[in-house]
Every structure is written in C-alpha cells, then in structure tokens.
Image (cartoon, rainbow, N blue to C red; front, side, top):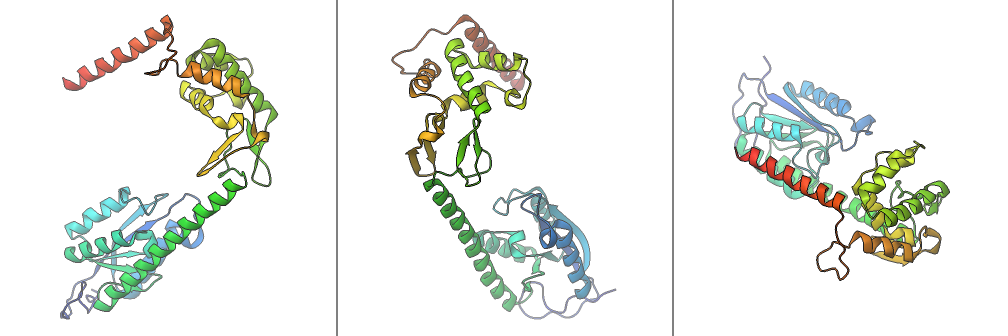
Length: 313
C-alpha cells in the first residue's frame, strides 16, 4: 500500500506518516464542445491521472463538465464534486488548470477555504499549485489573482472589439437577421431573396393584422425552402420589431442610420407597429379584438386555469 502524503493536507504542523493511501478526485471542464488538444476533457484527465501516479495517490473519482462556463457555479458535476468533498470521500482534488476549476478569484478563494474545512487539498497540474502547505496556499492566491485578471482582460478586449465593429457598422456576430448576409468586411449586405420575404411578411401582417395568421400563410406556401420553416408568432413578432429593416443600426451603445441596410419603408414599419400595439394598455388607438383572436385568448386562459387547478389537487 502506498504511504500517505508526508505533509498535512491543509497546512498546520506536520503529521506523522500513515500507512494509508491518499484518495484523489479529478475535476475536468471544457467551456465549449470544440475545445481540443491540451484543453480537452480526456487530456485534462490524462494529465491529472499521470500526476496522481507520480505522487502515489489513488484516483477514486473523476468529475467531468463538458461545454460549461467557468463563471457558472451550477455545473452538474461540479456540484456533485462539492457534495462528495463535503462527505469526505477524497483527500485531494486535482484539476488541469485553475481556470478549469473557477474563473472568479472570489469564488476560488471561498472554495479553497471551504475545502480546507472539509479536509480536502487542491492541486493544479500545470501551475504546480498545491494547498497542502502554507506556501502553496500563498501561491494559490497569487495564481487566482492572475486568472481573474486574465478573465477581465479577455472580457474587456471582447467589449472593445464589439464596440469597434459597431462603430464601423459591422455586425457583432456571425448570424445576421433574416434579409441580410455578412460581407467579407464584416458589414451587412442585403440578400435579395430574404429581403423580399421580409417585405412580404410586413405586407401580409398589415393585411391580416394577425401574427398567427402570418404564420399560417407562411407554412401553407407551396415553396418549402428554408426561409419559411419553423415560423411561430414569436419569430414573426421579433421580425416586425426589428428597426434594422428601416436602416436604423443599433448595436451596443452605437446607434446610427445606415441607408444601405434599409429593406422596408418607414411608413410600412410604422403601420405594422400601430397594428401590433393596438391592444397595448394606454394606446390612444385601441382596436377591437376580432372573434378568432378572442377565442384563442379565452382558450389559453382556460387552459392555464385548468393547469392551476390540477396543480393544487
């Protein structure tokens, strides 16, 4: 049987050697499904297992969170790991790098204190972080500060990049609204086919005065291309609210008129808006709800009431 690690797991005075194996657990995380090489789940676990073999520790648990943000503490396997640590089922927790464990210095320091109370050490493979000694605990806080600084710098650079793109009238991501495509320079350009569909939706809504009616129309069209699939009243509503179709570009704190982005006229957009908001409380031009819409509204409320009754039984 391997000898117990000769220094106390959480600092303090040295303890005598015990003929007991150190029980190790491994925590690995990726923040996106596309991470590869040194950041992959398998590679993180492999390096942690290798470190345990070098130290003579016995791996008893492996916790994996795939495609989970480090800022989100409600990771399923992370929470399971915390519960097992609290139960005292392992003595040391290994992770490949501190930012796989936590990206917030406040969270990391708080966790380190909690683990210390549970009698569990933390060990980072790539940073030689080891809280089994007072020196290791001091080093832990330095590395945690560096990780927090790096996260804030990345966040700041991302915001600056978005602001710069917005100032130049570029689209901030790779998914343009219906009616547009992204040019090689990052600006939007009008897609003729999609733009025609956008205009058709506005015109049809003005005529039908009903988002579900527009959806029924789109789904009943013989042309079954990708432009008219998976329509719902909500997606129609989002489209009708998008000021970009009048050339009004608004990204972050940047708002300006970009004439080449216009797809519908101001008069068409305003007419659709008046119809869309005609039932809004306080509107000076409230209309009368048609019979079909009233029936749908009553049915929805009735179903909600029935669900409430069932939940109270």
